[in-house]
Amino acid sequence: LFVQFSEWGGIWGFRLLAGVTILLWVIGLVWLLSEIGKALGLRLSVAVKLWIAGLAIFLSLYQTPVLFQILYWRTGMIPYTLPLVFFVGIAAFVVFYVWFSFHWSRARWAGILFVVLVFFASVLGETTAGLQIGLLVVVVLTVWLTQAEHQRKDVLTMLTASLIFAVISMLIIAFSPGTATRLDIIMRQAPVYNPIELSLDVIAITSHFLGDTLKVAPLPNLIAVAVPFGILYFHASNGNLSQAPAARIRLAILGLLLFTFIVVGFSFAPSAFVRTYPVARARFAAQFVMTLSLILEGGLLGILASRLHLPVKADI
Figure 1 (tube, one colour):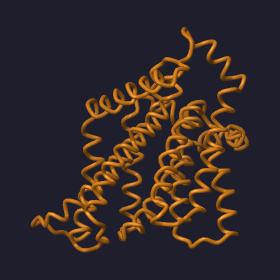
Figure 2 (cartoon, helix red, strand yellow; figure 1 turned 90 degrees about the vertical axis):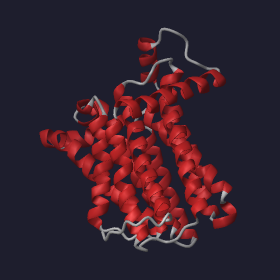
Figure 3 (cartoon, helix red, strand yellow; figure 1 turned 60 degrees about the horizontal axis):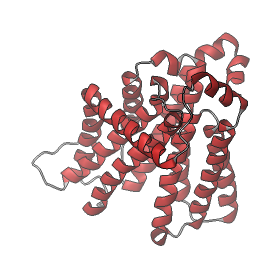
Figure 4 (spheres, helix red, strand yellow; figure 1 turned 120 degrees about the horizontal axis):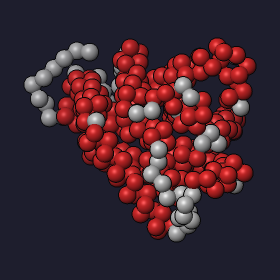
């Protein structure tokens, strides 16, 4: 479908595909940051949100060794990069919807749109489909465990339905004739059907990826933490941020670490299933999730540091 869209534009459709993808990606991230800012009571200018969104995308692209494949090769860009645009937009849409009080008509149309977006995002590729299933599993569990605080059964229903459709999308990919052909070519051993063995392999691959990324490229990851740390620190120090309990912020920091590990692990599960380490282009979505998580961690740490009342003040 998306290849056909670019074909309709002729040579210009092919040339503009990467640029339009990045543009939509930035817009989605700015929207997501705006919704997160509203939840935190944070007043950031559009320029600052654009800068942070651009930083997340730039650092992700900067660290990938296969930039050509995930931007300019449609066979790599559509299954590994384009879904990230969907994921960011879907996340922003969910947070945006939560701000509205429950109304049956609104909930119905929002749920239909959400499920359709999740379905389309999932069927683009098995790696990103696994990542989205991981995202939805964590979010559904979080909303379910905190239901007593927000009483939003409509949100839980919408997320659960989307998780079901994401799993259906993965099954469509798994049982498609093209997948069987690919497995016949790449497989030297039988796939890993034992769930315990598969889980251990996923944990090992995820741990190696996260550790290797931090070790090989420490400076980009340090920048990802330091920039939002400074921005949120000075905003919180100057009273431009709602006073969330410190215990809740610390819980969010730890939860975000666990969230990142689980989501990255889900994205690597298809590779572990066929007993291979994910190739570089298949690791790009995990790289973006890790970079965005580091940015959010830096912001949360900046808020905590502002509670220490250090003698550093600034206006942004």
